[in-house]
Length: 305
Image 1 (cartoon, rainbow, N blue to C red):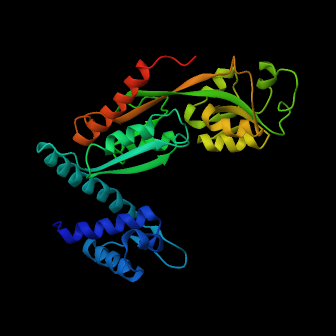
Image 2 (image 1 turned 90 degrees about the horizontal axis):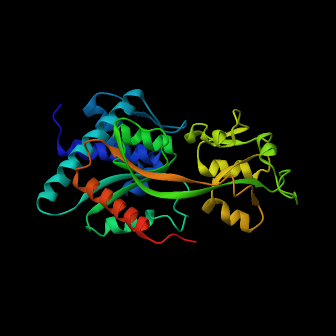
Image 3 (image 1 turned 180 degrees about the vertical axis):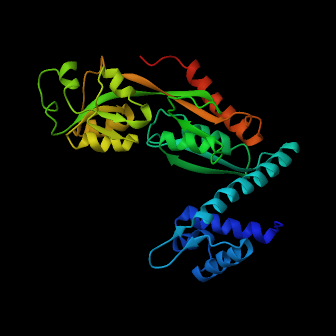
C-alpha cells in the first residue's frame, strides 16, 4: 500500500491509544472525542484490511495483527523522525524526538546527574522532544536492543553485543533490614553468618550478584525493581541491598536499619547504553555528549571525605 499523510496521522492516533492503554485514556492526550477516535481506528483498520484491537466491556486489547502493526508503525515513524532530525542537523539545528529510558527510583537521588543532564540536553534546542520512559533494567536493555528506545540509563550487569555502553556515575549501595525484623532492634552487632541464615532478597536484574556478595546460593525473595526490593524489606521479613539514597528517608524515620556498613557496601555502576552504529545520529550524539560532560565533571571533582 502507498503511505499517505492521512495514514501517518491515523497511525499516530493508533499508537497514542496503545501507549495510553485505551480509547478513554487517549481522549485527553489527543484532545478528541471517543467517537472520533473510534472512527479513526475504523478507518485505519479498513485501510490496512485487519482488525487492530478489541474494545468494549472487556476493555481494550490489541489483536495479534494490531501488535505487529504497532511495532511496525513505531519503526516507520521513528525512521521518519530520524530523517527529519538528520535534515535539520545539516542546517545546524537540533530538533526532533529522542526516546530515553531511565531506571526506576533514581530521580530522587540528589547526587544523581540525570536531571542536570536532561536540562543541559533540552537547552540545546527548543524543538527537541524527549520521550521519557521509566522502567526496570532488563526492560530498558531489551527496548534499546529492539530499537524501541534510542538510549537508556541504568544498571546493566550483562553486556549486550549489539549495544554500546559508556560510564555515567556510581550509586552507593547498602544492606538493610526493616522494622519488625529480628535484626532491627538488636543492641549487639549482626554477624555475616546470621545474615546468610536469613531470607535475603535477590534483585533479578543483578542476576544473583547480590547473593554472590554474601557468598550465598539461595534467596528468600526476588524483586525486579529497586522499589520492589524496598517494599519487601519494609515488611520486616527480608534483608537485602538497596541504594542508600532510596533507603535514607526510611532510615531517618526509623523504618529501616543499615547492617554491616563497613562490609556490605559497594557502588553500582550506572551506565548509558545505545545501539551500536547509532552514535552518530545528531540527537543521540548530543545526548551522549551531555552525559559525558557530567561524567567528566564528577570525575574531576574532589572526593567527598
